[in-house]
Length: 123
Image 1 (tube, rainbow, N blue to C red):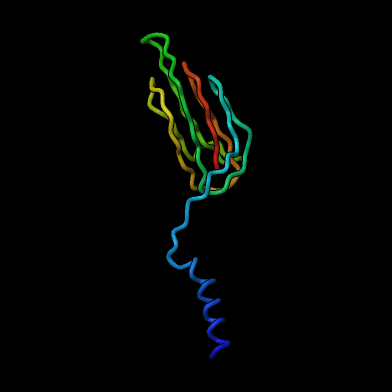
Image 2: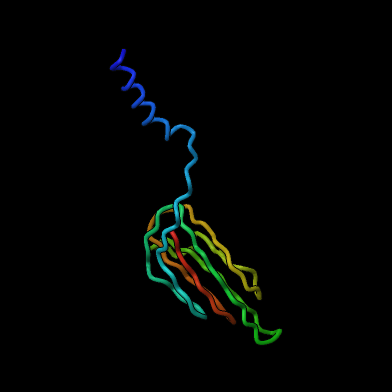
């Protein structure tokens, strides 16, 4: 019995961290960043699900007839129809994070008018 007790204690100590201990969310890993004005198609990058698109858009309308537009289309490599589209409504500045729940190789089409933008991909 004296030899069994330390063995049981060792097993309990190994299993204890896995029983009901909350885990923290992993820190997102920065993958790519793009910024500019106008439209841009990015290079292809690899991401594993879930990954995030963090964007910021500053609308710079000149007058009431200008329409500030910003949208990011997410494409899977080799496909020509987006799997997601993120961005604010027309004529609005904004920032947000959107999550993509697919793994693979992707590229972004960033469409903008009358404003500047910054887009980051995190895994």
